[in-house]
Amino acid sequence: MGFRSATWPAQSPEGGRVAAELDKAPTGLQAADPRDFHPPADAAVICCPVSGWVSQVDSTRLLAAVPPGTTVRLETRIGAYVHADEPLLSVWPAPSGDSRQELAGAIEVADARTMLQDADFAIRQLVDIGLRALSSAINDPTTAVEITLRLGSLLRGILTAPLAPEALRDSAGRVLVQPWNLDHEEYVDHAFDQLRQACLDQPEVAAALLRVLRMLITHVNDAGCPERSAPLHRQMNLLLDSLRKHPGLHPEDLRRLESLSADETDPADHSR
Image 1 (cartoon, rainbow, N blue to C red):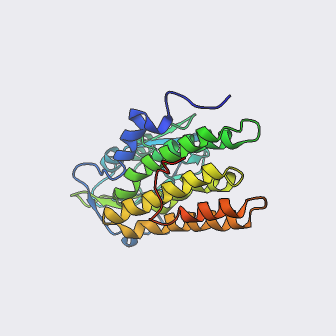
Image 2 (spheres, one colour; image 1 turned 90 degrees about the vertical axis):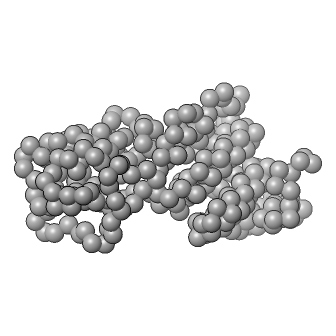
Image 3 (cartoon, one colour; image 1 turned 90 degrees about the horizontal axis):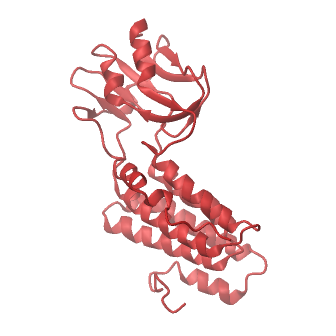
């Protein structure tokens, strides 16, 4: 029995909402150059009080907790697991005791990972279903193809959206720096690395992955951001290279898969 479900995680309203808001910055904050803000030796380090998943960061509350001219640097990211007593924030000039508690309270660390602000978790949930479908115990390539297509739908929005700036400044000179946020290349790798490695024994899944990668390359080029096609080309080349080396793949099957990287090939393969 496969893992097909009427409710797919990244296609839920929550998953779509989070992906659509990746580029959103709180009202009143402007982008700043992150290279201008390196923690000095006397920066205060605020550690995480508990272990868990970083599920939400309230940027407005973080900056409201400190005086004008203060810089707050997030030493983790949404979707990361942080251990108790690990650095959560660096702040300079050093804040007061009350401000430290308010700063720590602006970051929600939960027992379980959630999709509240975490588009990467939407990707992770889909990939996990795809990997289970490709396992020898399940062997459900139809679900793996479905997952690949839905990842393509999710990545269409992520790859054409400008991500939130790495550094944000308010009108009073407060700055929030978030150096560990995921970039477009990391989203691509998280979506396709494991499925690419696991699909070599399933040519139809590999074909779906090649079609989705080619679709995304066309999409980002048409959207005016061709620089974001590089990690997609890399995934395609890695998959083709692995397929060429994979034992047992018939030369005719290999030629068909190689053809899917060309624009002349039917993107939906309606004849099959």
